[in-house]
Image 1: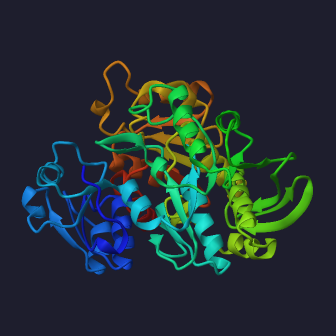
Image 2: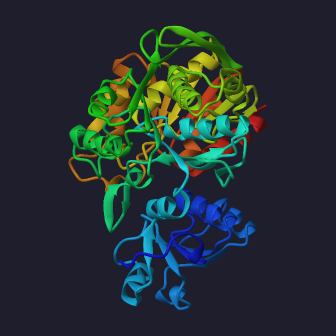
Length: 475
């Protein structure tokens, strides 16, 4: 690979797989920074296609070697592309410089900025979004690139004039030519490590390999940097051993570092107090609920304090954070039934999201509707653990596994077994494969004041809007 020139000498950039969440956000950043941006993708559809075209970014349908005939100065290859992708092949054959998405972020945006990397198996999207908003609210005008849409901005990226750049550090592989985690390219100066658990079963054979990936991130934080870590997680405590950077722990209850305790929680969020090394740091309010979100906020508070932001300004940012789309996201209320959308798919995330929903809606019946859709949930690695993750739900509906053939035979997740295990635990659980039948079941069985929590990392066949419409028609 020929390394491209950096900074202002690059003018025209072509993105392979431009409509992916991360790639589309990078395209927006590049356009705002003054680059001439275009890209290619397959099955182009809103909302990403609309967002890109509204910014004047040209989208080419399909992957063709001819898309590079005018020789852009840089090609960014998304991790959706294989080594056989016609544009990836053409870039290599023609000597056109190319980078992965994380390499491009590091090379074109992080030089000279204070990179704040938020990493971990769970919570990194909300934590990174909150970090960006607290800095913004405090007048720091940060740049950010997050794997979800911040409701405060209506987008997942921003190019500010301040010194800070907040980036969500994903442990997923970088590209077909770089199988290492994305976060290795993000030049961390400050890092928040939220959690370390086994996930991405198609990439990591076991928990030890996941830990090793995070150890590589920890080793990147320089001696004059900051590593804020969740001390409630034993795997995190293990991974940060030997770090060169200053270590600051956080967690619930009492202990060293930044510690939080919830005073009250309900429909409007929660009030909580924070101590620093046993001394009261402040009392804060947030529209978020759940112990997992308390931990997310503690990590943000620790970094914000280190960056020179006072408790009052931090509190204003926490209080005014509107949240992330697809994270405890209320999609609507119809016939008195509240429909909430969440990205949760890992058993730990399912458990935490249901607990947070219980805190927000005390005394109300909670329906959990779950679609096994990720590469990990298609596999049987968490078959038994999922049955213990739905205890805070009154009723559970499990959809069919999305594309089960993508998991190896003999190691596939069984929805039927999950439902049987849930019933053995005394839960009201049903396996309903198809979205129309799920909607019919919910319209028939829900009642006023119920909460339907829909958990999927995909569109789930448009279930949310169709359910709200059907409930409205029911009256």
